Amino acid sequence: MAEHISKQFDLELETIRTRVLQMGGLVEQQIRSAIDALMAGDIARFDKVIAEDAMVNAMEVGIDDDCQHIIARRQPAASDLRMVITVVKTITDLERIGDEASKIARMGKTIYQAERYQVPRFREVYKMAEVALAMLRRALDAFARLDAKAALELAEEDERLDEDFSSELRQLITFMMEDPRTISMSIDTLFISKAIERIGDHAKNISEYVVYLVKGKDIRHTSIEEKKREALDD
Amino acid sequence: MAEHISKQFDLELETIRTRVLQMGGLVEQQIRSAIDALMAGDIARFDKVIAEDAMVNAMEVGIDDDCQHIIARRQPAASDLRMVITVVKTITDLERIGDEASKIARMGKTIYQAERYQVPRFREVYKMAEVALAMLRRALDAFARLDAKAALELAEEDERLDEDFSSELRQLITFMMEDPRTISMSIDTLFISKAIERIGDHAKNISEYVVYLVKGKDIRHTSIEEKKREALDD
Image (cartoon, rainbow over all chains, first blue to last red; front, side, top):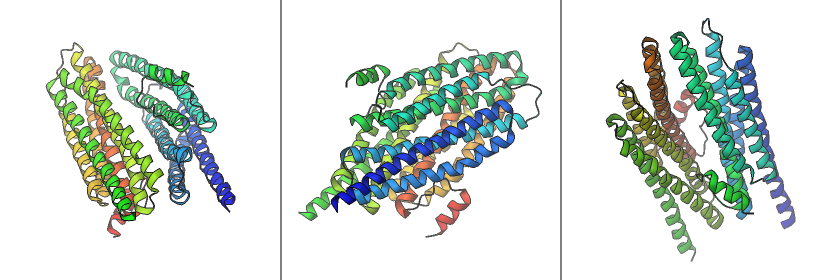
């Protein structure tokens, strides 16, 4: 009987872990679609990304619900409890990433539907998006394989993304000063870049929860130096 | 013995609830200080807000830790479990609010330390901050008094804040087009307003967790119409 319950419990843990990865895959696709739509001016694809938000939100609520049932019914302790709490936190960040993808789609739609003569410049945005997508995949992979080392890499990638954003900001300010007619579109582009920067931030958060999951140590709010020491300390 | 354990448990729940409110009071102060520093150009006060971030982060980690101990040791069920999970989620939003206050302080410092001839225009920022602060107080009050009705009000306030932001954005774009020398400072001001808008967003999130806590129903991702129906349904 105890063995049966234990197998049932393992299955439940495995199920929520799988669902987290499915949710992660879905928001990855949303970001991919939003960026492709941006490069092509594809309004229908923007709308598709926006519509998918409801599905992402439903997944969050569903997995969250399952986590609470597991806690109430199975009374997990130690690393199993950490797993469940990690899932609760991870799905919140994934849902916020989905929100950012929807915002990118909404802003992209605004840019293409406004009647302007300028051609949008999205090369920097595209490059930043590739970095953020790679970060998200790395974070989900770290969750799947319980890899505590990813957090250090992602902290460094996140800094790089912040620098890319600052650099693009300076560029856009220069353009705007040279041609004030580009101001409105430049600001829209800036907000899209900010959304991408925040996606990277959320990916970094997820990798930090994995460290907590694996080591029982909370490394959120630590510097890259401290993360390096933590990663070497195995 | 059972009564002793039960009283001990009640005390632990009461303690984490109190600590959430303390953490909330701290980030409220941070926002207040950042905005006052902005109106006065008070660099020292900006630095104080930035330094307080470490305290806010430490509180999050500490309360989070206590929550996991409570779950592991007391095995709460039903409404007690919902309380603990609500605390875990609320402190994440409070910590993010603290982050936004730090960002406002950092950006304020940048604005005042750059050598510019223009006087910053922070009147709109100040008005938005007053709204966001009121929203945060309302959310913390809702948490303290288990008031499920606050979520509807805060959803409406949040929309108002988003409109304030859009309106300020249009204003700044006009200024920038009239005088491109103001572009850099206008962008900094815009980012400060965005940080304030996100504070309101987090306050709204907290009020939604309270509905879940009180009613066992997850109303995140519902429209204002649906929230109205939920609030009337008592």
